[in-house]
Length: 405
Image 1 (cartoon, rainbow, N blue to C red):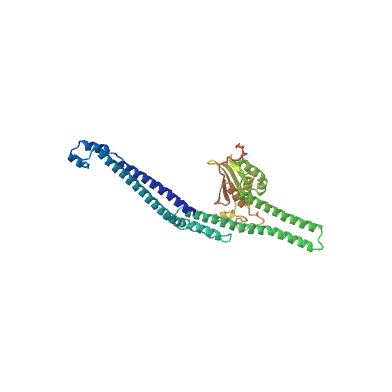
Image 2 (cartoon, rainbow, N blue to C red):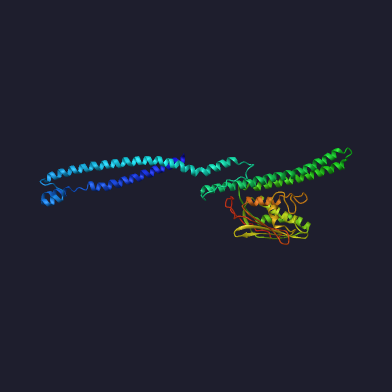
């Protein structure tokens, strides 16, 4: 209805403007003829022209100048009245035509508006029918590549992202439930066995308590990892400037004892890398990459860590040796509770959330994450952060990094 009223109003205004211009042009052109005023010429011709000339000028014979003037006045008055009557007739007929065409324009506007809004009705009807259990459905609008089809395609893309998000959420909940249920089941079994033994002594009960505490510690690590993953996926409200080299150097110093214990050599080339975001989340990102590089490494292997600026963007590169990783497995490694070589994370090889947390934190910072396998084994992971944000609340001051690990 609103579109129809808009169409009708626009047509009415444009039609009225067109008729006004036409009326003004007609008045101007006809007035020049009616009010041109040739009376003086007729009177002068009546006084001095011979009979033949008076006849050519249309002046009856035997009329004086005063009679010619009176006749001219009557003719002009009659012309003015006729001109006014014709203008009134033109105005009346134009108004009738405008009214008729306004009605026609309203009917056509209603029809055209209905055809234009038909895809929107389709989108609305489909959106009402789609729910969380039918996100696989698509609008699949056809027709010219206009704004409405673009809207339909955008809605289809939104449904695709929602479908992927819901699927990942359901899979994540199932995996998390399994990972949390297993330690609880072990704790319950250990406690039930201990309580069922009437001759259990203090050492046995102490051992049971230690096993329960160990399982509880594993649950705490899992819950902490899940909370970190949730914070990473929630995004960042406030950006703070930081030096990626300084954070990486701190992480490498913390992991030095673990690397020495495993006999893994860590090489670091840490150049200044200015970025902005959440420093604590970035520290978790670097920690998980280093943990992954140490955990899935070969005996007496190496880990290469570099930071620096690439085209004005801070970049972190972590390369390790280790088992060969198929190219097809790269995407799965960044899913929760997944690791190379198995469908699910084992309890002896981490929680299976490290790289998924890396992916979530990188996405929250708008960073580009690139992972590729090394031909000789291991992974090469590159995280490239966007240029430093200006909304961090203070100016950026570079911090001199420590070279080496």
